[in-house]
Length: 378
Image 1 (cartoon, rainbow, N blue to C red):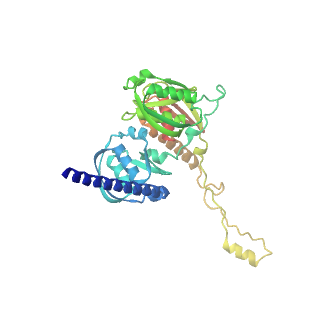
Image 2: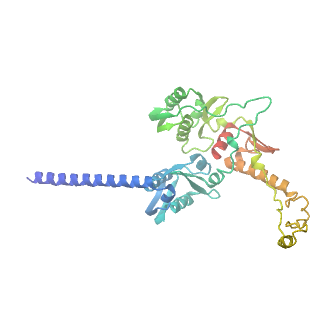
Image 3: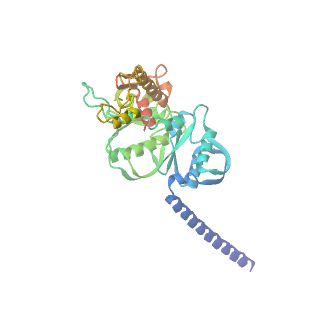
């Protein structure tokens, strides 16, 4: 009898728990639907009641922030690794009744290294976290997308990009080997892919290393990036894995292996070096205008006399400083390029060099350097 009573009580408790779970799922679904209808910028103004982290890995913090905000967070791990931030970087933070955008600032400030502040930006419904330098410079330069200047010898520049193929509708890699994943991409894209297995083995990656990845409607280039990023977790830029296109061949190797030889690329940067002179505009004399009205038969002009100042005859108040401004632009451009991938990638420490000749930007750099440049100004 006692057993039956206990069973009845347990049955009631189970039913109540199921009903509560169903209600919670329904309310969560409604909240998720509501957040999907909210403009992304408004979601940033949402007040978070309370957060408390103690040495929680950064990747888990980002996952939690994505769930409570309705905004996906994507970390630019390649840039973050440059300043010593990885997915396992511990976060310790306590806050109450704080706005979501302010919470992001507090989180990044708490882990940012000295002299390397972190930042975020909103792109659609995605929050991208990177270094402040990368965020600020993303729209400053577009030279990477400009066509390489053709020379008489080469005629057509060598292929440096992966040919655009039809996107893959569905990718489901569940504990498959890296070799199997590469074979799948090779068959799906028709690309000529070479894997430097000897270089990968130096960082503990073999043909049997497992890959776990699921995606829909994804390009081959993006798929390769996701795989190499997965292999690079916790590594610095020289031990990370990259894919590059050299003469039509997709090469997958470590940063160290891609940092041995150099090549030269030339870019037309005429637009970036344009300096607009500040000309003196015409002036109107109100006195002469009144005289012209009262003395219609006289030859009066409404235009004032601009012949004041030493530079008036040329109409350019900047004078010789135009050349100085253009030189300053060149110096700033070179500095931005060097800082975007690290001073150690350039001579005398590294193999790269950059200079401006006329309106042409000439960069000599390793395949790793060019890969990092493309990521910096992507």
